[in-house]
Length: 297
Image 1 (cartoon, rainbow, N blue to C red):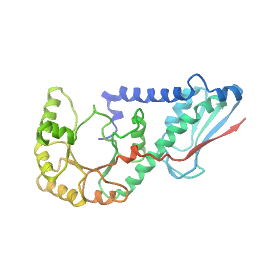
Image 2: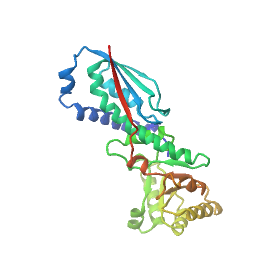
Image 3: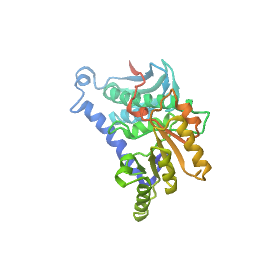
């Protein structure tokens, strides 16, 4: 768990993901050119664009917007007024970009698209984080992200106070129910995973899903790093936490997942689990309402 973007082994890969996504976002919007801007705006016209909040929330994507406008025109002057992770209120001025109006207008929608989605994710994540702030539980994201936008979706979760789970299929082993069934049981699956890591010199955390207290006990015997308690009821989660501690497996971290929302996340956290993974943070995004207003010199 944590910010895998700082992992040296994956750093170039993450940078490539970010750069490609930004380039594609700009290319799919302008393609051969922004004909509206080309037709109506003097190429030497200067002014400024100010991105403002129209709703309360946590700001995310400011640095991404900066990169979008810089890609549109390296000569633009960009002033960050509110940093990523800050709470903003209606009317709050977030970012100001000055220079030639044409590249400002060309980059406007792409910058806002990134910022609105990321700020929506950060805002929702922060709601969950606040609900469990009186416990030791951390809020995790999942791989249920928009294809091609995972870097930004997960960055927004981090900005909102959540913790990033694995980025993809390559930076952690997570044995799910289908893996367990296909392998012949949770103990066999964990054993195979550990052997594979040893044979290939992989330093990866091993997590396995369990669907019952019976599978939990089998999993503990296999000593994974993390156990995912999938769709457990509250009493089942509490029983799992008690059993793990009572039997000397305190080094195995427990993650709760499934049927968890703002209405019950605090109760789930109170059972003593270490992590709570929430798919809706990134698969059901409500964008934060932002807009850009221009001023002509």
